[in-house]
Length: 259
Image (cartoon, rainbow, N blue to C red; front, top):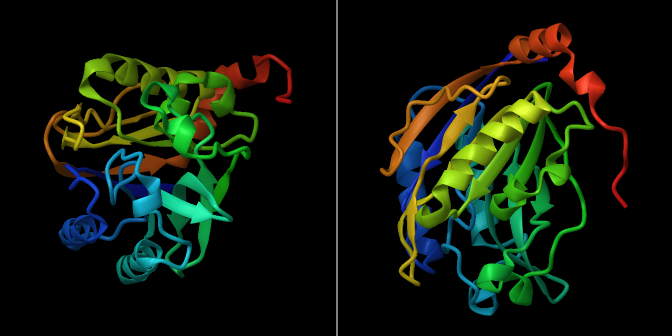
């Protein structure tokens, strides 16, 4: 088990519907990370922006972006995660890919598709909750709109890190800030949220506000909210264990199961 987990969060603008250029841009950003890290987190739909033209942009699990993530994970000796448009068995998914340093992949398909933007008309909603074991840490990955639904993130697996990737617009960013902090507090877990900046092809503005929150809901990253940037934050598993045992809040959680 590894007590400290070094996480690099990348808050970036995205080139609308241009996977090749986005891969180039993120290659440059990842190359700029000179110190060793354990996990690199990219935004939601980091190769396209929040586009609904899935039929033109979708890739397969053997496509260029998956191969790119595997190559960079091996080069950086770090896991890389972020979501992309994937087509599988004729259905489109907003799929978070968690690529291990050895190239193996686990994935999570976005459960709550964003009806306000018509995402539910294009993408198939995921059904499975996922917990990833990495270097002795239990990581629960979720995507953007999932943040509004606390039952789906409920900490029944004793995970250590709750992870959200997003294209969360500026107009509702106060909810993003509030809910990230709440998810950390209620689940007694580190909570990492990585959001994009800039304008998309539909002229929606994104203001970042990516953040890392500790078990008590204190923000511990140093990113500037509305600018591109990279920050590296060291998470400490002992802090999670000590505070959970000291305060015992998770022992008192309501007992129910999801259908």
